[in-house]
Amino acid sequence: MYSHQVEFSVVKMCKVLKVSKSGYYKWLKQIESTPSEKEIYKRVVQQKIAKSYHESIGTYGSPRVHDDLLEWGYPVSKKTVARYMNEMGLCAVQKEKFVVTTDSDHDLCIYPNLVKRAFNIDKPNRVWVSDITYIRTLEGWVYLASIMDLFSRKIIGWTLGTEVNKELTLTALHQSLVTRQPSPQLIHHSDRDPNIVQTIMWIF
Image (cartoon, rainbow, N blue to C red):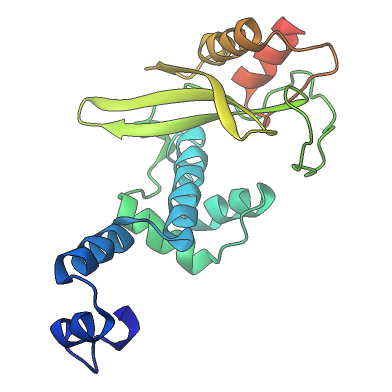
């Protein structure tokens, strides 16, 4: 019915197929309100764009944000990144207008990548991944640190804060450890954000 509604009236198709018009419109409303895979992917990419932009203290334009996305495994075009940044109201500004809150070019110990993009895990508590999400509110930016178990793809620990620091990630990780009590074989995978790196060094 949905694919033929341009050719035939909804009333006529409902009569022929013996379905109620109200039932069809209820189904149609559910379909239209459910985000597509493309929309979900767009939201994920926009979160990563916000991550790259704010980790650069707002100095990254679309070319350098695009480089970060490619490094993180999101193959989108420069044109798409520029369009999304425009929709999000993000544009590069002079570095002097910002107070430095993080140092991405840190000299802390970097652990080897043990996961190597093998994200299909067959048992729980074998691989956890962590990330920091940037959320804009009416009162300013807040930051969400979360831990996800790759086996179930569920968030097992999280915390919100108004600053990006190791305490933010440490709280989320501590919550996950207390709840799950994993074995020493657990792999905790993250990006190279210095706050997450310090958290891993502290806990392990």
